[in-house]
Length: 431
Image 1 (cartoon, rainbow, N blue to C red):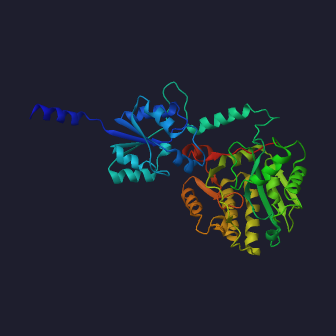
Image 2 (cartoon, helix red, strand yellow; image 1 turned 135 degrees about the vertical axis):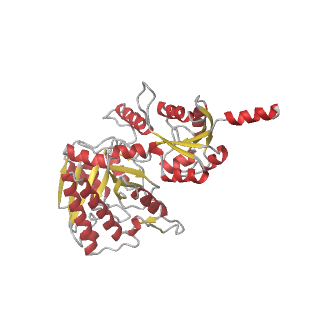
Image 3 (cartoon, rainbow, N blue to C red; image 1 turned 60 degrees about the vertical axis):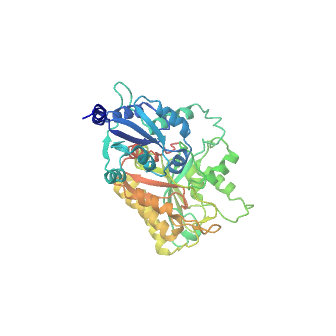
């Protein structure tokens, strides 16, 4: 064998495997660096980074650091051989980068592993390795979700309770749990029943047209820009309802009372409707264990907002039997929550949403009056994706649907949000 052939042969023998990892790495922290170091033990490490467009599409908000800045930071980590901006989109946005790197090994955190990634590696002959998330020796465990929560908490603590932050972030929002639509007389005329709501601290960005009563919230901000006044919650809700539904309102639509009540009444509340806009009675609780039960098993996921011209009432089909199913589910939901019975809660929660959709199929299949070429397949796709997960027990869309959020009942909210960074936990307002 010639000397040049020997050198080439030895070079091939000593050539390191190519290792690939992928992620957004927006808030770069020690957990990321430790993950890179661990992955680089298998060979030369190449990193795919989610683009700004993919981040916005997937998480419905802009990254804190733009893609070129994130690329610069990752490239300058000692353990990284090279990094690229992924040119694909969606959860598996890294396929074009795989074509460039042609790795021998694909490494993921155990929380970021999936059957789709494993199958992709099998099809391409790439070794698939999952690593448990472990901090570097002597350092605190870090995750992007926990870091964002800490930053948010710190930002909130710097805002004066009396002054707010100038954007009305101190105004609560509401999440409807069961019985939605019963607050409209054209529904309760067929059968009376309860609507169940919880008042939420605005610990997340409350986006418009997403089923969290932002129109009512904006009405409140016209009177009380920074925070709700200290007064009887039911009377406050009456004032908000009357202000929002002024006789001078030109569109003729009367907003349901569940929005005003859900925002103004702290904790968990149910309100009974029977052919009227305002409920006959209200019941609420701020029992700590009950509110913790809900917080430990409810998470929210952002989807695309409800688009302009979207109608969820075009094909409505309201019958006494369907409204009764809605009312029965809400009754069962309330009982299950107070008993802290997760299985019963999930069953009733799911039944309530199914009753809603039976009357208003446009909630998941909206009609676009102004743009009939539009469709809402992304809603069905999102529901199908998350409902198939073992740790998801039930699901619904807040408000009138047509886009916005998915609100899931899960086995454990904290572990779910750690495994799915796109999801976030909720905090119920106590007072």
